[in-house]
Amino acid sequence: MRHLLTLMEYKPHEVEYLLRMSRDFKTRFMAGEVYTPLFPGRIVVLYFEKPSTRTRLSLSAAAAQLGMHPVATSPNELQIGRGETVADTMRVLSRYAAAVTARVYKHETLEEMAKYSSIPVINALSDRHHPLQALADALTLWERTGRLHNVKVAFVGDVSNNVATSLAVVGAKLGWEVRLVGPKELWNTKLLDDLSEDLAKTGARVYFTDSINDVMGVDGVYTDTWVSMGFEKEAEERRRLLSPYQVNQRVMDIAGRKAVFLHCLPAHRGEEVTDDVIDGPQSAVWDQAENRMHTAKAVFAYLLR
Image 1 (cartoon, rainbow, N blue to C red):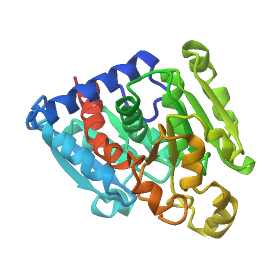
Image 2 (cartoon, helix red, strand yellow):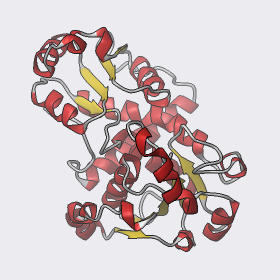
Image 3 (cartoon, rainbow, N blue to C red):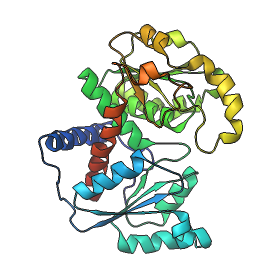
């Protein structure tokens, strides 16, 4: 059974295929073909341990546009919240649904879900990876630059988080240059070892730097919240550590006029990004958010085909 827990397990040609399918879905949607009922009447379970706006709504819309019925739920609405095991829960869900998407606190929960599932399990965000977001990021950069490969992007801020990690993974698959710009205390250099095979295959380059000037000449400048869900106790220390890495107009000027601004949202305006950037002419965040729906359709179609 094929799952999508991370993009690490996907070959470069599979990632490219998902993106080409996403672009095709979007083109048809924009032409007025809202519904593509590939899986009429099937059920997809959307399981959320954490709050969600874009992920919940994009997955719901994607499922509905493919003819499926999305059922959103949480631990408190299932017996898993009262002690039923993940294994037993997944054995039951596998009898009802065509797929399960799950937004969880710990990545290990997804791995356990997949272990006992006979239907695809899709990572809707964990503490380590956010593959659905990375696919939408790649589609957005492809649209804005006209290039699927040979893109240069800088992720600025918390370079250890799930969004930065998945951006590096998708970049390694597509032959990008990914600059992870943030304080040395947050560098996850093991990531580079994990990506070494893909880097060698595609000619991609992924590296860490603590210099904000390394955004110069990129196609995209990306940032995310400094305090992710689950790290609230470290909020003040993280703000102190990351304040030099705020994406403001000075940073975008260094990047250059051709650079687009990216953010997975929700944004903490005045912290990791200023209003004039996220609302400015270089911002692509709303395209990014929309693209979550189209890439989700591609993932469903690929895994359920």
